[in-house]
Length: 122
Image (cartoon, rainbow, N blue to C red):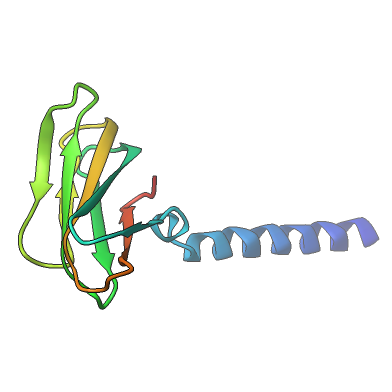
């Protein structure tokens, strides 16, 4: 009887763990934060699925943030350079890509914080 109860407890714990893991979005767990000055840029690399969205946002001192997606050959395959602080780009196919993050407008002299993530995290 004690063995049956332990199995029930173990199963309950395992199910709860799986349920909790499902609550945490992989994109949130894998977000990257960068610090950029006005007109600054940096590049991050990730493996993305076909159709996966890569997006960014920045702090209150940032008026514009842009994303550029390059394939492994260095060819630009998508970009969002609209004048806004919430760019989004999409991987056209599964593979490894470089994401260039540029901050054309940061009003704070010490720089601005930008967070980059994707649908599945990277």
